[in-house]
Image 1 (spheres, rainbow, N blue to C red):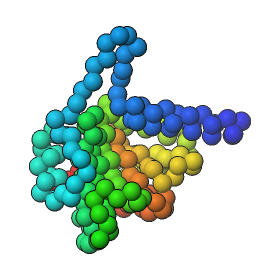
Image 2: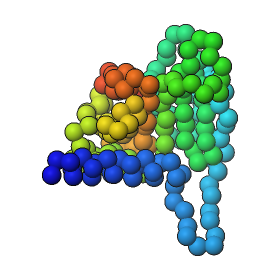
Image 3: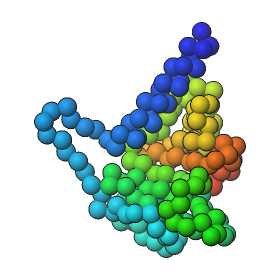
Length: 178
């Protein structure tokens, strides 16, 4: 029975990840509507001021792990309105294929409710300072999903070291750019 519960939780998390990755609703009919974000941008080095201004233009928070000395903030915005802030060590070029810490902000109506439902069936969830909730799958522990009540954004925290991703969240460092 415990194996069944673990499988059910893994499938639920996979479903949420699939919803995020697929980029929103589609249509099975002949006509497909695609929304392109006017804020879309290829990866580039961003300043804290640019991140703040972009959050204002987006009309919703953009999350990050706060300032970190000796890091370049690589900002990417997809055509579907997903924001990625990646923390590159000094000397690593923008667009590098290496695995580095990133914080993704995704439009996701009632993200907190969705994660709360998953957490009921999961032992891989924990509270986040500020009233949020974090959920991850044991099959992909380096990717932790976070949401806060009353927001329509899901936050993904990735770090090559799963324990570091969870520590960033548990410390309260995952915050909107201010």
